[in-house]
Image (tube, rainbow, N blue to C red; front, top):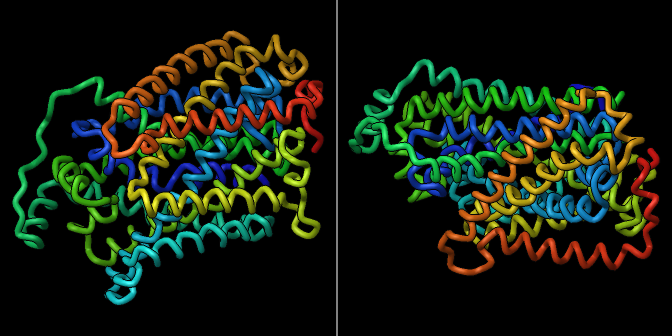
Length: 477
């Protein structure tokens, strides 16, 4: 995998629901955020950038599959490395299922806009939506198992189409404004709304929204998982991480500004209470039918593109565990023909299928997002701590760092990034535990703690079979 494909893997893991759904459904999940969605997005990028620098530093010294697990287990503590990465694996695997479930309404809307109402109505059926979401998961499980050219030829073209069609949204934000939207809404639905007004700024609401927006930036971890398959990984992986976070951050901000420049935030807030809303659905009121259809198609492709990259990412975590004998050796099995860790990929498909089924019965995809945010915040926090600790815990690997070699800069990234991410984690946990839900298991924190207990018990069970010296060196390629 060259620099382009590695970067594409990260970008595709980050974009999809992160830009087409979350910035608008946030109005329901965090009531009162109102016109401050874009500033919350910008603020959420701060800890993400520090985490990206931490990853870039550590990846330059440890260019192997396993990413955060490998970095923490070698530069901090084997136990912390495993349980944090286990929660990451669980969270991301569930989210793969959540995303596959979200994709179907976008495909439904494409057919609706094209006038194929029978197909659109068929895709509205709950059981059909679930079956198709499971079908998508296993199609991309197959793509990952075959790997190589099929993976590249699937990812890169869809990435290009995604940016081209998504750019329609950005251009629309220049052409149209809220007056156009208000006029169109009145003509189409005989509804009258007032232009959006400024509201009082609330730090508590703002920070709560930022913690959820943070989930939009976490996909660059997928880049760190490509260590065994990347060309010149010591240089290309850090470059890809920083390039992906820059490109995606810029795109996110332009995209979100454009939508909110057209659609009054008060309309978004009201609609989000009634139904799941998306960027294409909001813009359909003002755009010509063809443009609207293309935007929906672009969003569907963006969501679909999440799947192969995320499956690659989390399967390599399992592969790394098996290489260290934490998981059975069988999980690290390489396909004789395709040279991919097919057992690990299949197991990811199984957990992702559970995520899709859970979304179907829970009826709220934000539960899966919340679980992912909790796990990834802890993961990113440990990456910052590892940057601080690696010089003492593993001096040999510390001397192998080639990205940001200045120790003062490393410590600044580790301490400042760690403090910000810890703050985000506390806010996110408080928001989750204080929320009113029907059942205890709809609190993502409780689910996360259960996963941590399971991971801890499993690690203790396997520990006696593991050579402690394993964690002083990098796995063989």
